Length: 173
Image 1 (cartoon, rainbow, N blue to C red):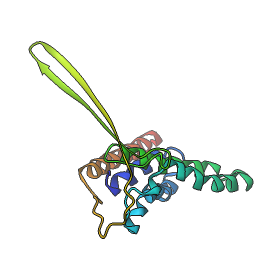
Image 2 (cartoon, one colour; image 1 turned 90 degrees about the horizontal axis):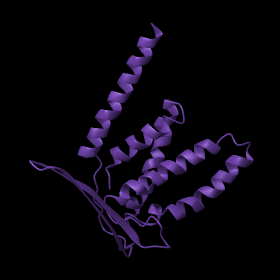
Image 3 (cartoon, rainbow, N blue to C red; image 1 turned 45 degrees about the vertical axis):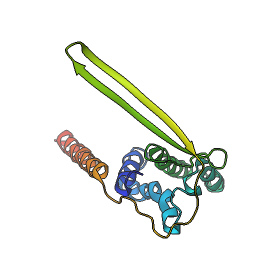
């Protein structure tokens, strides 16, 4: 899986385009919710199914709509961030994103580049593997909290925030 920091930062960057940055800091935590299954000893369990997420979010969406629609945008954003986590996980290992309809899916995507005297060649490689999901509880689950990807995203996020701040400061003058 992408590390927890990467999941959070991607969620934050998306959320801040929809809601105020201070609210984005909070709602971005929804992007971590699918990994709550690790606390139960079964990583990539039903919490990694978009179908289960849709079923769970339907009552919340109905409540948001019936209460005047004020929070519909927030519920839809939360569902987007949750689903984004699942999509990111598809590229890092078998993920039961369509469970119970389909087993776990793992998408491997790579583009190999070659530059030589004769020119440039790009070779795309796409593999989609499906496996039966294993929901057996494990005595221990290991996973990255921070990795190179998370650090890179943290640097990019900080750069975006600093540039936005400087841009606003310069436009005020």
